[in-house]
Picture (tube, rainbow, N blue to C red):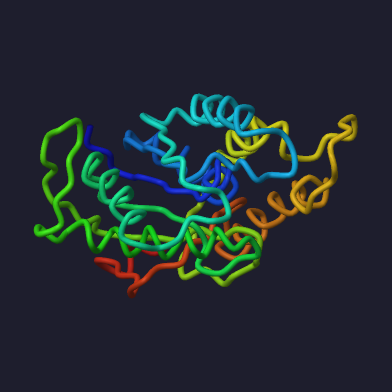
Length: 238
């Protein structure tokens, strides 16, 4: 299956928190989008890996993505080496996306920048024909995405560009809240974590509002890029 966009997250819920509004908008425009989670989030303080699996499936259905896969790397302990890069390369060659979205380049959770660099490196390596991979016993053809963009997570990094997601914040919120084990719930007896506070949920909305304010729209999501942002003409800017 050829996808237009393939979004990677170190943990289930990373993609939703960072770029669910953009994904929902692109799908509404007819784009085929997939999600690949590197780990099952098994080290998470709340819930369990099995619960996260079910929540990820529910969120994928809400967003309407074409496919969601989990590479089952070790939460907290995966590294950027050949074995892990080969797994990512296999996904890139399988789905042949034009655009890859991945974790923040710098963040509070150590898996986020690790995942960011791992996916970025694999995107380059996936275009080298002397790296051989297989899918269901069949050789895969090389493929290098045209663009690699990094969404923003815990830290308020300065984006290189923003996407207007006005009209898509409700679906972003529903996709996030599909992970009911992870986020604010005043009735739960689970331990409190930094992302399980009301302030955290509120901050996600504040951020989209503030980025929207800065570009003259209601809501937006920010991204960082590895190369200069280019437009065909000045009229492409909003």
